[in-house]
Length: 107
Length: 442
Image 1 (cartoon, rainbow over the protein chains, first blue to last red):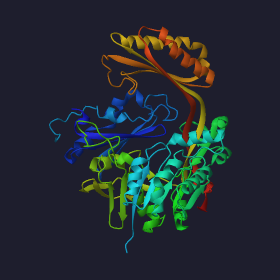
Image 2: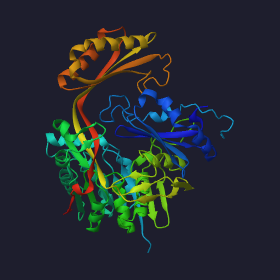
Image 3: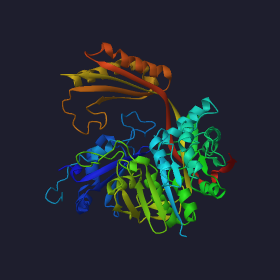
Image 4: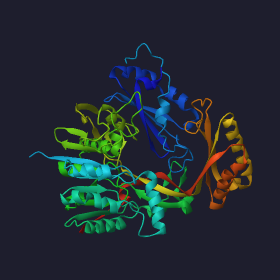
């Protein structure tokens, strides 16, 4: 299943750095999110879009993850030649990640 | 009587809409309105406008702002905004003119000067880590440098009775932290309280981002009405922090909109760096306590950073974007062929082109091909380049247009051309920024 089926996201930019937060609709799915949505999966989905590091942080209070990606906007909003220099659309890309946990996910 | 403050969000960027913010101000629900008018690039563009015209470089909405918020000011409402951008003095002139024009008297206008640190950045040859150089290495291209202003001068001006406060690059959350600290009597070095004030500020600073903007994604994330979003407001007391919006407006203040705003544009949730504190949002909780009414808490804080972030504006020549569409069978191949042809035709200009990219809207423009593009009915070739000079940028634009004579069926050529002003961060020791506050009696 796609991450989009049980989680939502928003991307933000600062310079050439993008952050992508991901929260679950149902708190019951937090542990699955935590276990399944690894830096490796995110790196694999973003590929050439992210030239730098990807760091994963947790927000235990709100049951969310925050991925911080450096060198991720082609130089940052003011310098980038990309169509979406803010990376606003990245929130839709992360939700495309396949999560292999159909049995466990509460809907 | 226990202390409290009701504060609303009035703007989240330089061209944000003011009509819905006015509704909130006129509702009588808030004593204060905060206005963020600057994105990273807005500041540098404002500096460039000022270089051309010494009376320019500030928020261009001030005449409209004064017309819309005259009633709020007349009722004693207080406004704090970074309307000054690159030219706080000119912004203050516009505000005074606006007060007079709209018949508002007795307003003390507080002005914060001194965030322009261009001389410091060059004298001390600060590092520009994202560019991998120091300021002196590209001195001829450095057009501006503004350090982020914190809550301190805002509190100072409120203590002096200012009702309308403006400055240059006031940090977005500080626009709200200042009034909250002042009204609640929270010391600016009470880091726990600053963390709490910063949480409220962060939930307000992006305007409709907290009430349903940049949010809905049917069929999973759906809100009843996103046509007319409300701007958010907060009620802060010693007992609780409540975020809500004006009744009768669309969008939502709920768990989902609050969580996405909580983590919007933050990095380490346990160390959100602002000029006012190192705020910790990791344990923040949100709880719905009524329709469009959310209680939040759990923020904490540690001492503020010793350095201030500076945004350095860098002249990068010219940016040109030219686009053309192709449709029907073979459209992707024709667009790719068009890109190859343009690349060949631009070979004589190569030395003046800093960077150029060719993207296909509908295939790979957003995600670099990370999602398979399928077999679209139409595509749009986008050629974007950053060039050293206008002549080279003109050549790119010309070749884009000449694609009329490229592969068959190209249509809808559109070209944009603008000076390329980049902004890049630097860090300045806090003591190197000397702010000056001024109160003008209108």
